[in-house]
Amino acid sequence: MTTPTPEVLVAPVVDAQPERRLHPMSWLFVLIQQLRQFIVPILVLFLFGRGDRNDLWGLVAICILGAISLWQYYTYRFRIGEDSLQIRSGMLQRSLRQIPFARIHNVALHQTLLHRIFGVAEVRLESAGGIKPEAEMRVLKYDDALALEALVRRQRGGAKPAVAGEVAFRTEADAGELLLTLTPADIVRVGLISNRGMVVLGGAFAALSQFNPDLLSDLARHWGRIVFGMVGTYGRGHEAMAMVTLALLFVIAIRTFSVVLAVLQYSGYRLEEHGRRLTLERGLLTRLRTSTPRKRIQSWTLREGMLHRFFRRRTLEVSTAVLDNGSHSQPRSLREVAPVATPERCEELIRHLMPEAQWPMPGWHPLHRLTAWRLFLPQCLLTAALGAAAFWKFGGLGLALVCLWLPWAAYLAWQNARHAGYAIDDRLIATRNGWWTRQWRFAEIHKLQAIRIGQSPLDRRLGTAMLLLDTAGGTAMAEPLRLRFVPEAEAFALHARLGREIARSALRW
Image (cartoon, rainbow, N blue to C red):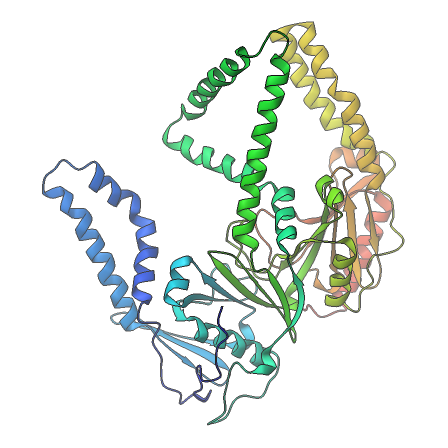
């Protein structure tokens, strides 16, 4: 990665600055993006055509998409003003957008391998709570993209606007403070802990099964014959050893795949602080660089699973005010502050980014005394349903095998209830849960947007309630911040206290 020189975008940042075009090769990346949307029907025309003139429609479609891409390049202009970015597009239907820098909360730079070959980047300017980006510039020269990111950072940080003849963008003063980087050993730990290989494999099977509904059954029969054929080559009494060996080989292959995915995603991971903004850069083939103000962080999540404890590590994640529509593996907004780090380093990062808050929080309150039974009840119902099916299919032996799960489920429920709780002070509200996989979630009280208290019929019967705490942004799949199984009197008292705190404080998100 080359360091941009001060000569990049040295024109003065004034409204009289001339309009600029995107990179000359931007039409190619627009064409590739459009081909992704129409690749299936085009391939159908090419591969399943009848050998007549109808096969030319695929070439016609590609030519039309290429003409549209060139049209967008020649009709797209942008101008960098003193406090805003102006974007002009369209020829027949013209559009002029003016985006104040104060409205831009996240700047994401995305580079695939093709982007890096041409030395360009895709830039997304996002606002708080927006489903779509305020502007998507596909593509800019990489140095220009970095300069635009630095300009937004300086303008939002309250820097004085540039005057004529002044170097407006990236200087030595823009160098940030390095907060976290990942070593190769840390990246391997991320792959082993996350097990993304299983997630990707499951998603691939789900997608392929849409084209062939019999895919899973055919694979099961095929691999079943292979596995039992291999087991049959062992001597009598060694079948169990063969099955265990094959299971271990499968686990090792999946974990190895997860490590490869982690290397591709987290190579070159750097978390830096530039004044009031956090900048994250990562990726081996596809590089992602995103910059978000610290104050846009809405909630925090600290995770610790069994493999985390084995490696003496934790994962620190955040939810920002920018809605993220990307996939979980490639989010565009800031999400993972520390994919893996020691518990001490995670706590240092929390205290550094929230200097006015106290973490770890003292004085954790336990949940309702019947929480263990509440957690155990769904397991009982599930075991009863599975036990009935096993008894109908296999008789008493099947029912006995299913019932062996109940003691372990009861122990898990007891441990989860024992480790669960909540804490609150003048600055933070936090909840913790889990024993096998532990999780702490917390947010600053002045970041809360809404508080909802709810009670199911069972809650009203047992004297418990649930508090749902809503913050800005996040993802549709993200777990909300909620306090479950809180004693009824405490829940209503918390609801009243948080309501008063929110009413008398300005919403800062």
